Length: 307
Image (cartoon, rainbow, N blue to C red; front, side, top):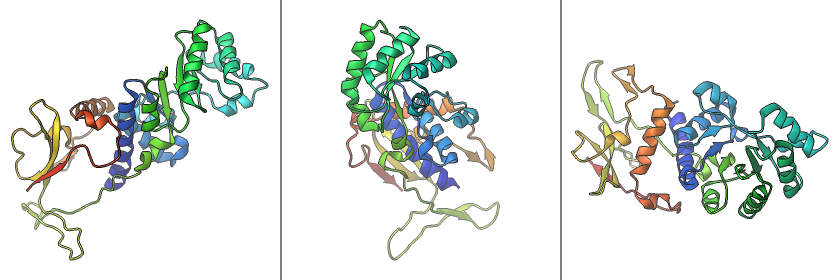
C-alpha cells in the first residue's frame, strides 16, 4: 500500500511540478480523470494540487480533499444543441457570464464572435482545444480585444505537457488545462521506488539493529535507518542531496525532504493540503535555475552518500 501510494502520487506530483514551473505563474487546471482509474484520478488531482495546480475538474477530488473545482463544456455539449449559439446561451443561463466557453467545435473566429454577442464583453473566458495553439491564441486575443472583451481570458488544452506549456510562454494565454500527460506522469508513470528492510529488533522493546541484503547477483542494500537532506551552497541554493545514517551533520536541510508521518505508532503527519503546497514551493525555490530547463537527462542535483 505504501509503495502504491508513493510511486503513483510522487510521479504525478513530479510531473505537476515541472508543468507549474513551465507555466510561469499562469494557473494550470487538472483535467485527467477520464484517463485514470476512478480512485487513481482522485489521488492524481490531490498530488497535482500539492505541486501547484490551481484546480481540478474532478468533483470527487473536490469533495474528498477540498480542492477547488472548475471546468468547461465539452464538444458534446455544443453538438447536442441545434446551434453553437444555443449551446452558449444555455451555458450562460446556467453558469453566468463568468463561465468559460469552448470555441473550436466548428469555426473558431465565428464562435468567438458569437460568444461575445451572447455573453457580452464580460465573458469570463474562452477555451481553445485544437490546432496551432500559439497562432490561434494570438488571433483570438486580437479578436476579443477588437470586440471589446479585453478582460476575457484564454484557456488552452489539447494534450499539453510541460514542454508544450513552456513553448506557449510567449503566447497570450491565461491558463492551461492538462489531462493525459499529467495522470500518466508525463512519460514517467512511476518513481520506481522499492521497499528494503534496513533494521529490525529482536524484541518488541529492543533496539533496532541494521540489516541489509547481500545478493550475489546485485541489488545490494545498505543497512541502518536513513535520513535525506539537501546541502545548500553559500548562496542558499541546493547543490546536492545527501543520504546518510546516524546524526544529521550541521549545515544540511532535512526539513525540505522529510516530514514525520508516524512516530511511536501515532499518526502525526496529518496536515492541510495548503501546508503541503507551501512546502513544495519552498523546496522548489531552493533548486538551481538549471532545474527549470526541462532538459531530459541526469538529475539536476547529485545524490551523495554519507554512511
